[in-house]
Image (cartoon, rainbow, N blue to C red; front, side):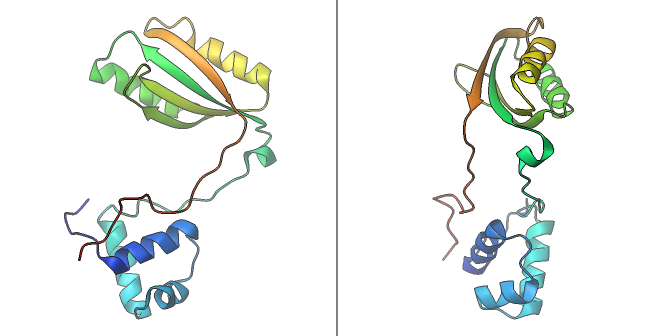
Length: 160
């Protein structure tokens, strides 16, 4: 990311796009109070600077046959950077994996997965995690509900 600091307009653009990434440029410009050409240039700069990293579709996993989500907490036996990176990359290749978090604390990695049912979850845990020499501990927690906020995090403030 570029070292350029974000101003109030940048934050308003980010907040609006966080809520609706499909917002047309002219409506976005109107919402933040700038000309459409200025707005488009700011969005392009935010993207080029790595602040905006992409635009994504939110999908209802149930429509795809994914009726069970879980968080798998993993404690590794070894913590060499190359081993952690390789494990991370391996996880991201699995179609069941929705997100991977490298964390501090009792566990080393949290893996958010989506599967069709409890049998598929059991098979995934047994085939991918249990019995690996680099696994010290694996714990699975079912997710009953998942909700995401579309607000910018507290503490994210423009300059000036």
